[in-house]
Each structure stands twice: as structure tokens, then as C-alpha cells.
Image 1 (cartoon, rainbow over the protein chains, first blue to last red):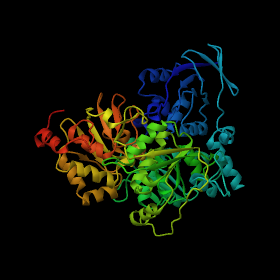
Image 2 (cartoon, rainbow over the protein chains, first blue to last red; image 1 turned 90 degrees about the vertical axis):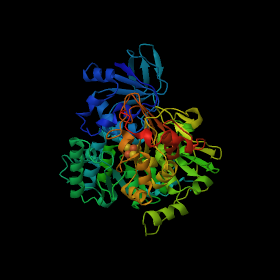
Image 3 (cartoon, protein in one colour; image 1 turned 120 degrees about the vertical axis):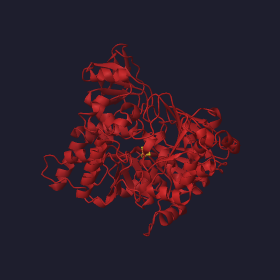
Image 4 (cartoon, each protein chain N blue to C red; image 1 turned 60 degrees about the horizontal axis):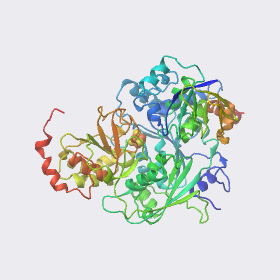
Length: 164
Length: 447
Ligand code: SF4
């Protein structure tokens, strides 16, 4: 079961997810400490390890708009969060798939902090309210990358087949 | 047939006779640009080769550009060490389009690329920066990607599994009023479309107003297309594109132009007449929170910024210099000006703009991203307000989540610097303002 641990609104930018002043930090094992750095309460809980792996960050439309910085994905992946949003900005979605951050686009989702969600390809069930919501499948064009386990593995395979 | 500019470019780059929105393609990349975040790309690139017995090698080092701009000169040992690592890598890989921290060839990536003739109509350009959309101003298909995706491009020379985006056609007519221009137009468009209105789509700009617009203005439109969520912004190449490439970018080779088919399929057509458009302002904290200036007139401003890849070019500095000539920046307001490239900085010196700015009390900074992303210099204090010609006003964008950023054109920024409050350059009697804020007012006030 995936519990909603935090809720944000529409148009949350990568400047908010991973503030620019930490951009010199790039390593995926170092970026998680700066996830939502300017939201001290949420950042504090993340850093304290209060949320089990698979906890849900619930967002509105256009989550991850703005800068292409990949740290905004790696910092969330480090905390093993699942991002359920009404919609995602293009570059963020692409980066999430490339790095293997779990993202679910669910345009009609309604849930509160503390609600338990059952996630599946067929849809999302909010078990706290009993309501069911349709999900938008990830871009089919990226399926091969998802299947390979991310873009690094995908490209490595492609290179090997070129070399052979 | 029936193809938009983006579709034509992607079809050719993918070796297909035609493509349509929704198709999945693998376009060859003509130019792959990174800035300091090349440090992360290098990590991912090396990772791809782990366990393969292959040596990490960029597919074509003449097609990779690396420009230092986000934190120049370095603000910390960490950044300096990242930059050192990138310098060593581009040396080892023989990347020829490398622009480090220099006054001659340095500057912001989205200015350095066009002004050096690296961008040509019909190209597929990717960049590890969301404002890579800028380069559509010269008829290219240019879009932002993440660092891992760039590592994959460095290895394969192609962008893999790309979905052909649908295109929104924007038709612009009418003549701009005085002190109204491309920045006001694109802010107006973003306000209309909203921050996600063009998500996964291309904005293709047409109409008499665009035909008469300089490449500098077109760069503003394409630069900020991403603020409506667009994958790319494109102005089909025309006579002005050729003029720019020949006269300003020193290109000697033949230049092709890619035009949309007459019966191209558009997702949506938006028509705009700019004749009545007034200066537009994006209020905190989203770029689509756009209002005509009369709704925010008089708002006190602590820091004015003119510069960035959006509005740091010579025409931007020219209009600011005209307004600031023999005037003073208001007491209690500071003004930072950062030309978009070393070349523009030198032109502004020759034209006397730099002297005008400094006489007025502005601080002229080295070319680079500077305060635009607030990492490096020009951060805001708690509770302070900035008025800036940059392209984003997200919470914390100028280095402090407890501050606010308003976005505007260079003319509005310059007029507001004189008064210290948001000011319409059309209405304000600038002569009178300078009397209130003369030399006396700029003496140290211990603020
Ligand atoms: S000037 Fe600002 S928007 Fe432009 S590339 Fe630099 S940080 Fe990005």
C-alpha cells in the first residue's frame, strides 16, 4: 500500500523541488538531502527517514516544470518516493523514466495526506475513500527504456549491439 | 506532405519521407549543447560504458558544444572543481565548440550558439537546459533534455524514442506600440496558453509581425516558449534568418530554409494582434501569472536585473541605455546588468552603453547567468522584490524563497530603475523622475 505523505499544488517547478543553489551537487547519493530544501518541514521529514519506500508525493498539474535539472528527479528517487500527479512537465517526465523514478499520471486524482492508494496499471484506488481513478499510461515511446531498466542500460545495450 | 516545420525536420533527421504528430522517431542530432551540468553528463556517459570493454567516446566531437555560463567565474571550490573536470574531459574528447570563462568568446549558452553560427535552419539541437528552445528562432528544432539523455546522445549521436510533437500555430499581426515588443508578446502568449498549455507541443510562429521581427526578438519568443510547456518554439527561416547568419554570425556556407507545407496539420491556431498590447508583467510565482502593467504600477522594487538569455542582447541594452541616459537609479533600488555574451559586452562598451549604465548607478556584471538563477550573485534579501528581464519567477528562483520576482521587458526594467517602482515607460515622465533621484540620492544610505 502506498500512503500519501505530502501534497503539493499545480506548476511545482524544479526550482522548488531542487533549488538552483544546490546544482553544483550532482551525485545521486548526495542530491536527496536537498529535496524540497526550501520547504524545511517536508525536507526535515525526508531527511529523518520518516517515510517508508514507496510513499506517495501527490501533486497537481504540470509537476516538474521549468529547468531540466536532473537532480530534481534523482533527489526524489533517493527517498524512494512515488510521484502521483495530475500531469507532468515534459522534461521532468522524460528524466523520471530515464532514471527509473516511479511516476504515475492521474488527471482526476483526489486524495489527502494519510490516504492509502492502491496503484496499478489499470488505475488508482484510493482505499481511504473507495474511489477509483483512471491513469494515463506513460508515453509508449519510452516503453523500451522502462523495460531496459532506464536509459543508461538501454543505451549500453544499443552500443553493444552496434559494436557486435 | 502536410508537415509542420518540426515534422519536416524530424522526418529528415530520422531518414523518413514523412512523419506526423505522435510517431516515434530516432532523429540524428546535429548539435548537442551542455553547460556546467556537463559534469553530470560525463558521469552518466562513463556509466553507459561500464562493463562493455568499449572506450567512452563522443560520437562526433565537432557536434558537441560546452559553454560555461551558470556559475562564472566559479563561486565555490565545488563548482570550480566541476568546471575543471569538464575542461579536462572536453580536451580529452577534442570537443571543439568549448567556450570557457572568457571575455572574447564566452557568454550564456543560448547566445553563444547563435552568435557563432553553430545554429542553422533545419537542425536538430538538444541541450541540457530547458531554454534550448531558444534556437528555434533560427528555424531549428531545438529542445531541452536531462543529463542522462544527453549522455545517451553523446554515445549514439541520436535522440532515442522521441515522440513527434503536435504543433500550435501562432499568427501575429499588428505593429507594436512604443516600448512594447517581443517580451511583452511572449508574456501575453504564456498568460493566454498557461504554463502547461503547450505541454508536449511545438509553438510555430507566423505572421507579419514575426516577419518584421529581428532574430534577437525571435530568440525571446522561442526562449520563453518552454514557459508555456512547449517542447520547442520555431520561427520558420526567412530572409532575416539569412541576414543574421551572414552579418552577425559570420556564416559563409549555403543556408537552407525549412518552411511548413501549405496544408500542414496544426493542433490549434492562435491569432494575436499586438496593436493594442501594453507592457506585460509576470507576477510571482508563476510565469503565466501575466498582467498588463497598469495592474502592478507603483510596486516597490529593490533589485532590477537586465540580462539573461532572454533579454541580454544589444538591442535590449540599447533601449535601456536610451532610457537611463543622464538619469539615476533610484535610491533604495539597485540595478544589475549582465550582457548575454562577451561579444555583446564589448559592443555595448563601444556604443557607450556600459558608461551610461554605470553613470546611472547600475552595476554591470560579467556575461553569464548571474542573478537569473540566484546561485551565484545578485541574490535577494528576505521580503525583497525584484523586477527582471529574465524568464522565470518561480519561488526561490533568485536565490531566496522569501522574496518575489516580477518579469518584464528591458524598457520597463530601465524606466522602473529610475523611479524605484514598477513604471510604464510610456506614461512616466522620466525627466521629472531623475530630479527626485539625482546624485544626492545615491550617496550611501546604509541600506
Ligand atoms: S540566463 Fe537564466 S534562463 Fe538563461 S541559461 Fe542562464 S540560468 Fe538559464
